[in-house]
Image (cartoon, rainbow, N blue to C red; front, top):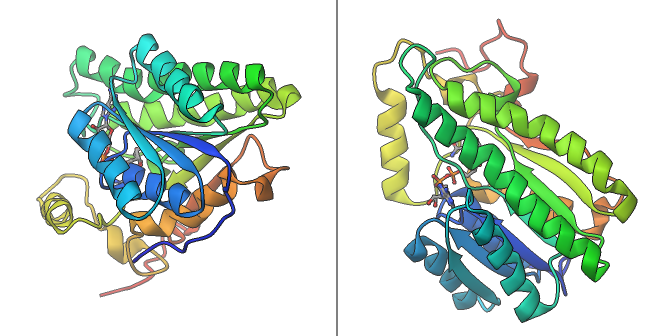
Length: 272
Ligand SMILES: NC(=O)c1ccc[n+]([C@@H]2O[C@H](COP(=O)([O-])OP(=O)(O)OC[C@H]3O[C@@H](n4cnc5c(N)ncnc54)[C@H](O)[C@@H]3O)[C@@H](O)[C@H]2O)c1
């Protein structure tokens, strides 16, 4: 599904971390489709470039930079490059993630630490760099932290991810309070298990979900709206948070999860 085009972000400059062809790339393209110039950042140079290329192919303006979100110099470099090219940063989307589904009994501590580093330290470093820049350019910007329903609820067998995303919820509130006096808004955006747009990635996800597991992964059947959201389903909420339409929204989260987290636990919406 092609996201709607528009000019709600005309004149704005956005930075998106973890710009994979899945959610980060869709958000980057969605922001660009609404008029933002977008700096696509990723650990992989190929991924960052492909994301920027998709935006340019669609008639937008983008630039790619590769680096590790846990590297303070990378965060500074990305923000500095956006400012050098386009004069400021209005929007930051902290989206990069290191998925590693393991539970507390099996997880080694280096992997746990690395997951928290990518999710929390990466968001901290990019938020700090972007907020300092917004203040110095007098930009009343919007910072959007990509959360997960796994951060609001207890997911078994995914301890690093769930813990990191839960931490990001209160990071969002805390930073929102601190930056309010500068007119900078900080919000979460909560997606849930997502059907990837790319057919290969979708097949990989289907295989993962159908793998025998101690922790039953009955995602689609549990969703009140009956299907997994796609990355494109997320664009509207993120464009809203990035735009001036949400000028009075800060320290909160918008959830796009097909009703998953509102569901009363014993209820099966789509019984077999
Ligand atoms: N896919 C889902 O089902 C789902 C569900 C809920 C929330 N989310 C959230 O949505 C966001 C995007 O998820 P996705 O499925 O598109 O992920 P993805 O794995 O497709 O993309 C993540 C990107 O982050 C990059 N990355 C990893 N480590 C990095 C690092 N250290 N520095 C810079 N970049 C790094 C990867 O190269 C990759 O391109 C994440 O924050 C994730 O937690 C995803």
